[in-house]
Image 1: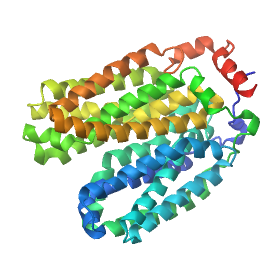
Image 2: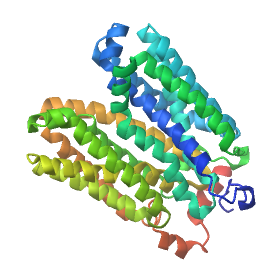
Image 3: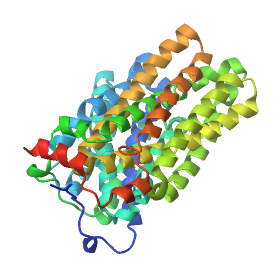
Image 4: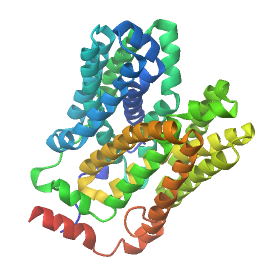
Length: 419
């Protein structure tokens, strides 16, 4: 049995590159992660209006991540037979509901419930986007298509908190959520007009969850995702207390701006190179982030080197989401949507764990320990990527060498799954 390809024939795909539709997917990713991160930029206002502490208001981010962790895999599996555009519009509509409730809620419990709903549809959306983008283009353009579709999420991660803080100051936090709802409604129209529809998977083509783990290459990619995002988040979340002892407490926004701007460069470079050099780019991402952590650990007393580290950090992180999602899509084949849900789950677990472990580390060992832990996590991640040449982070030359050989790894797993 050969691997099932659920993409439409090339004749069914617009001969022109579907930029408008891919940008609509990118806007969807932007809305997803902006909604997740917005409260971090407006905690004071939210806590005052809802009558809770800032620490309690911060849990509105936590419950969003928990919703994504709990829902990404089961909902992706439950809806895998749905037509893709129907599912996409349903999930986007869920954001409109969640953000509207958040904007009008005077109850902290109701606000948390709305945020949890946002996390549920967010986890489902993030698992959906990568596979959607790949099906919109021919095989040789899939990496480029994913880089565009995933760019919105990276932009939101880079500028989401500062943007939320600006909105909260300019129009109040409730109006900020209302504005996002209006943008979401406009996005629904954009998706209807520009994004093609695709069928879901037939029952016979679906792989059980356990067998998705067993597909060659899937497990190493998930482990690298956990380690890489954990390493990033443990330092990124606590960058303000990390910089304070260095006399740079007033430069946190400048450091984050440097990170964000270079992240955008990284997105562009990833889109240009991923179809030929995915493996090299992922090795480089791990190496650059490890180098940034090392510089921050050893030379943090030099402000110029701190900014240089932020630039290396942004260059490493900007394209990471696209690299990881492309790698797991290549490895999973017909189980791509479920594999993307697993990756989304790992990503959110790494975010939540990074925040918890980072806070404990900060209190027990002090700010300098954060960069050393980041470095300690990245070295084994780099080793896993380097060792996953045959399955996982596969070199394009190796793919060409094995293109004419039977896909025995996938074939065995799929035969077991369908037996």
